[in-house]
Length: 198
Image (tube, rainbow, N blue to C red; front, side, top):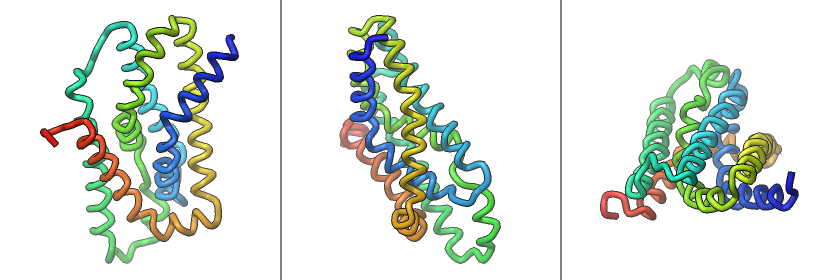
C-alpha cells in the first residue's frame, strides 16, 4: 500500500469533511441519553458517505447518475429535515412528557444519511477527478481510508458532544442549533448551486 496515497486520502477526507464534525456533534447531542441513537447516527453516516463514494466512483468511470444541474437541489434534503426538526421542537415546547423524550427518539439513520449525502455534493465534485486519475488500485486505497475515517469522524463528533463545556452548550442550545444548521446548509447548497434561479 502506497503511504503517499494514504496520506493524500487522509488530507482529502479531512478537508472535504471538516463541516461534518459540527453536524455529527449536533446529532450526538440530540441523541444523548436516547437508546441506540449513537448506533443509528453511525449507520446513517456510513450510509450517506457510502452513497457519496458510490456516485464518485461511478462518475470516475464515466457514469453519471445525477446531472450537474440536479446537484444543487440536494440542498432540499437538509432544508426539509431542518424544517421538520424545528417543527417538532416547536410542537414539544410545552410538552410535559420530557422523560419519554430523553429515552426514545433521537436522530434516525436515514435522516443522518440524507444530510451526509446532501452535504457531500461538493465532495463528489472533488473526488471524481482524483479517483479518475488514481486508477483502480489508488481508488480502492482512497475508499478504504475514507471508510476508516468515517468512524474516526463519528468518534470525534461524539467526543466533542460529550465534553462538559461543549455538552452543556449543546444541551442548552442544540435543539435550536441542529435545525438551524440543517436549514442553513440546505439554503447554502441551493444558493451556491443556483437552484431555482437563485
